[in-house]
Length: 159
Image 1 (tube, one colour):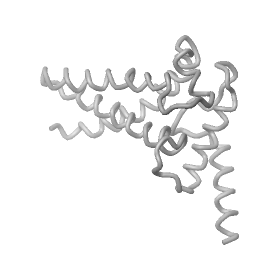
Image 2: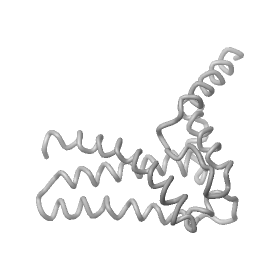
Image 3: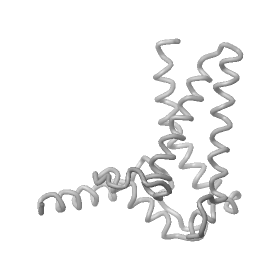
């Protein structure tokens, strides 16, 4: 293992937030809207067509790890692990915490997490592919973070 590997993983994780924003804005709300549209409306069932995007991100992660290991080049391996780490964070934050697809992580009442939920609600108020906002997952606009901090402080003062 090279000492710089974890730095590549963290850098990849950070870059993935911007990649996810761009993909969400221009691909999911663009030419692949067919797969993403069901995510913006309540429909019965556990799975959505939108879940195909997990595969779209998992494939490059898997290829980086596999090909890097096959050819002894560890930079792609760490990049693949960074993509996978972001995918895991996305699953926990987006599917578990925000959309409550599982019954875990429901009682997190901290300003940052409250801001994430608010930004996502703002994103989902537009049910069409146009006029969207807040396309990222972890990078929250400051106005929602400030609002969440005020709400959190008011809630904790009254206790």
